[in-house]
Length: 286
Image (cartoon, rainbow, N blue to C red; front, top):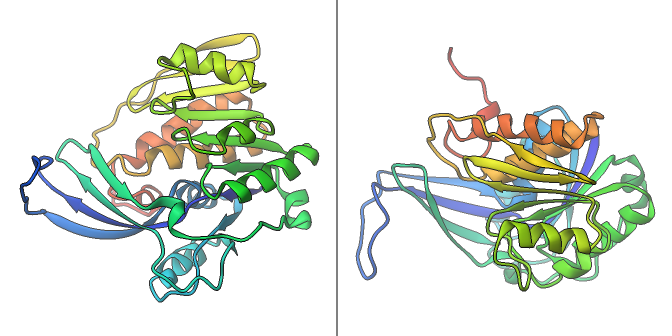
């Protein structure tokens, strides 16, 4: 199974602390880790870990720190399409703090850190893909791939982590929107508002995740909720991204929308039992 993921790559510097600090205070971290992250990147790696062959369209550049991202993608057999291979400044870096309950705070420069030229869609790669996911970062690239996928009758999934400039345009070509509880289009205050907005925009399948709370879904005239498997949480970082990558995998294997959501929630919950967004698939002692 092949898929294309378009969006952000980051280097995440992660600190584990007992509790989040108050303003104008300092706190000592229990541990410090560095991971490769970003919504589309984590999703592509999850797709690969489940047995798929993903390609990632993102901006990395040639700074020496960018090699960390490149090496991680090679490790997981993710094909890289670099939107700006000549970018020689520091890539996008996120500072992440995680408290003892597994909650997290993130500060990141996001895609505004890296300028990208017009995206060129690889038509051969697109023909081979069963699904294309766009996370809304690098909006020109997301739009180009979404438009081409829609014209090719390839399923387009929107990762709605938050409302971004350019999201309105992406909705024109997306078939499925999998959103976080933080996704708030203009004029929307509740999940019901979000669902109505997306349906009016022509999205036929909608899911809204909310951590350990049930997943809301709408598929055509059907609607309901799915419970999320409860686990002992160590780290929620990247769980939503893992969910998106797992959904793309199960949807690519021919499962229906609701079944793919249910199976993806199992994988995402399992990922919360380990530190980082990729450790869930590594061999662990019984």
